[in-house]
Length: 197
Image 1: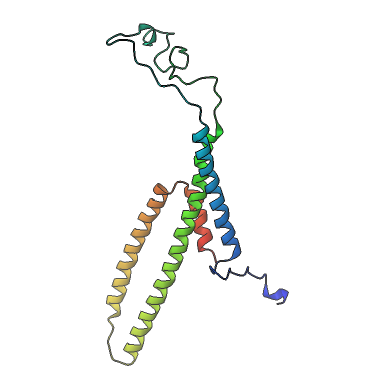
Image 2: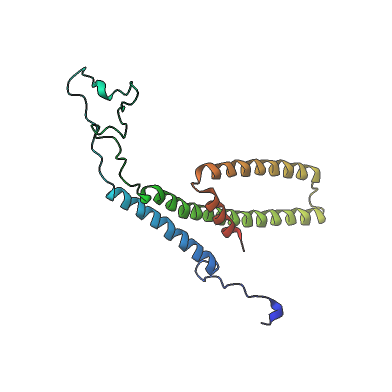
């Protein structure tokens, strides 16, 4: 190979037919998703226990000091109320695991889902193009031999209606991806990687 041929593309893996960089992208997304899932489990296991709220001592008894109707008096669940055991502790530090572990999981999982959708779409489009090409060449060959007469206006009308239907389906598919896939940007990245040659 000479320099005029350009850079060599990475050889596909023999077992999957995918280039190595795509396999590495899938592996990284799997590691990120597994890490996020592991962090969520660890966060749930190590979360500090919060005591349950207690009911008033007797039926119908109200604690007027905890109603919060007067200015400056803390209400039920107010963090300033030291008598309420269910109130959040204002001195407790926020645990970053509780906030970020679901986001880490969604990032890796959404990339994987986007990649899977892109790979399936790419395979589907290849099959559709092959079937449409075989059908078109068969029709042209049969018409050339004058065995059949093809009404090309009907074919064009059918194509236009099928194209309109497919466009509407892809629009609703896009809405589904935006609503159902947790991290749309990551999913779009996975879709782009899957569709790239």
